[in-house]
Length: 325
Image 1 (cartoon, rainbow, N blue to C red):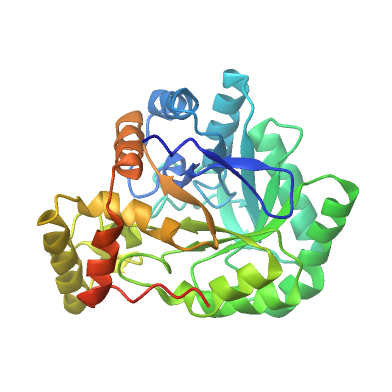
Image 2 (cartoon, rainbow, N blue to C red):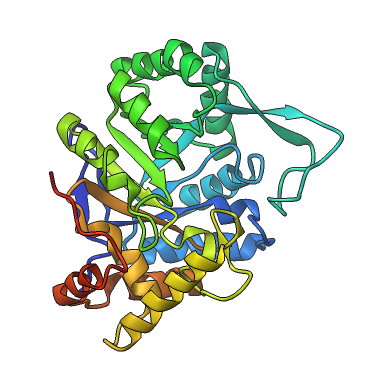
């Protein structure tokens, strides 16, 4: 059964995205450098496989992800849905920072700016880097430490742009549930990206965020399904939330992997499919740095997993029971 390229509609906006989307942080050289040729081939492969949703941000490679994605999207000459983010702008620098993004533009540095003018500048500069005349979805990015200014200045700009038809959907993209709930309560969002909080190791999002999203008709996008790596390869030294995994979480990841192996299911397939169990979830984003990784993700996404496996995982207390109310 092929479902990675099945399209679903945002609940409040006439946009259709594929069940599996492509996150492009790796195109900024996250952790490891990516060759230009691999970047172009990756986007071409995504279209070949029927994927139409692409997510990026100014932070990723300090603009490099947007530049690479835009070039490949223009070359493809196909229909697509794209989201980028606001909350950071890129200023000039003579002290390049390539610690996290190996392919970062050495002339730019990322700085937070949640002012109205900063949001407008961010969108304009994203469009210039992408080489596009529009973006479909704009997400408030990592605003947990700037909630007051986000609600007072940044969100109203996006709301106005949506009313004018400049953008089609307003959303947010965070790694934490509590500030996500706070923003969702005070705004009129179309979509919300939460990373790392609805996975085989962490089901916090279903406690308050998902019920609120269902109540307000907000379409949820799930990122971070491997929790930074430990659910792709649970070994000593693996990352969890961008830091070395604790012993107890590593033990649980290994226990889940062994449990699944006895039932003929790979850990990566279960990790990438797990979020779809919840009705609040619209689509899953995974970051691939080359075509081979993307094809492997598609195979995992389309692999058959019996409903009984999820039930047995719950009964074993390796994951929390699915909460639907």
